[in-house]
Length: 357
Image (cartoon, rainbow, N blue to C red):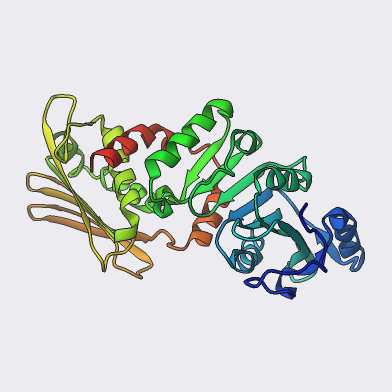
């Protein structure tokens, strides 16, 4: 039997009182207390376009994620459900409710509901039942899974998601985790999978594609012989996903020993470097004889530098850099939407590269 009331004996590593999360309430009274919350102030407007579940097994994540939701709801109206799990403690369940409110056009206060849960002990069944019971059934479910996939990620859970947001750069064994996700896609083929490691290279992909619109750079595609990618130590997956994107879009096949083979049998050498002082993705350089196409990003800069060099021809331009923090990347994903079909297209090649490096 697990504890559900605000007066339960609290664990030593979580505060007995947590006003930052709002009002602590019994699980059975969540809906009633939410109605009371809205009745207190008629000037508030309840806005919600999605269910956003944020799941973490990291201690202290509830407080951190509540601050993140406060920022996200400025531009993304949702019912937010935050979950923190600690399996090392005796079984218990606590809940809080609050609302994040922001002025709309300087007048009416537009608010988004937040329900926070802290579960301890064995949780898979309790977690599913608790979260499912408090979803707004008329809205899509966006599930932001923070950290490693665990046994809480099940077929039953994945079957009700509309969008799954993960960050594979945090995974110790990304091949195993992606294999699990691919299996769940067979059950729920409509599930949109978004990897923040992939999101981190979006502006690089846009920049490379735009550079090859140049009349000087276009012919270089047919004679490409070397690719160099530089990344920070924690962002190897981003570099490999970008490499997979280049290969898939150009029709190259991995051929071992850091090389690719074109449709005509020509070899392309790929050099992927980890650099401690690099931005998450610091450099992508494609060489074809005397022509070099380059996109680079200095650490902490808000811009990418895009360049084409070919003999005396040298052009440069700037473009925005991708955000680096996970909350900013999630906000970017929520604003874009889409089916993310390109990521699924490059996923097999990415996994092949991941296994060969």
